[in-house]
Structure formats: structure tokens, C-alpha cells
Length: 90
Image (tube, rainbow, N blue to C red; front, side):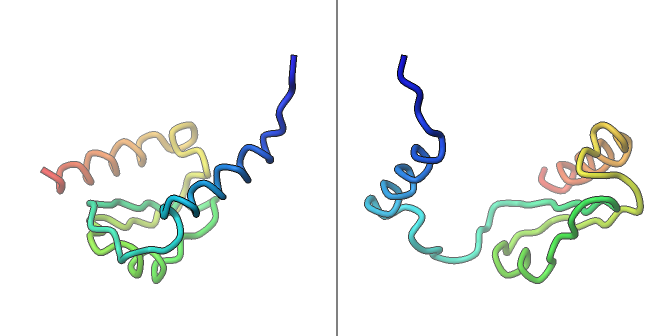
């Protein structure tokens, strides 16, 4: 049985992406509807970068509780945020 190194596989994928033209440059901001949620005990989002890279941000909320796993420790916030976002998409 041959074991492969996951890091070598990732490096090979990056080279292939560059050789076929994908992943080499960004043509412009995305226009797909996007929702962002920042919870209290996680790394903060950088709003200026989000707004630079995405032109269709429908929802950007900052919550005073929750962690990196809001489905576990703040499910009410997560469910409400998802419902609110998809209500705007319709």
C-alpha cells in the first residue's frame, strides 16, 4: 500500500490550477448573493475586504454571542440569520 502526502497533493493541484488558467487572478468582485455573520467568539470579519470582493452582500450581521460553531452554541441565531438571508434572496 502506498501512502501519499496530502501536502504534496495540494501542491500539485495548485500547479495545475495555475497552468490551466484558474486561480491565477480575480476578474472582479462576485455578484452572487452573500450573507455574512460575525459571532462574538470567533475571528472578526473584515468588512472592507468583504465589500471589496463581493458586490451583492444582502446581509452582514454582528452578534454578541456565539463561537466558531454557532450551530452548537447559538442555534437560534444561526437559524434566524439563515431564514432572514434566504427571505431576501427570494
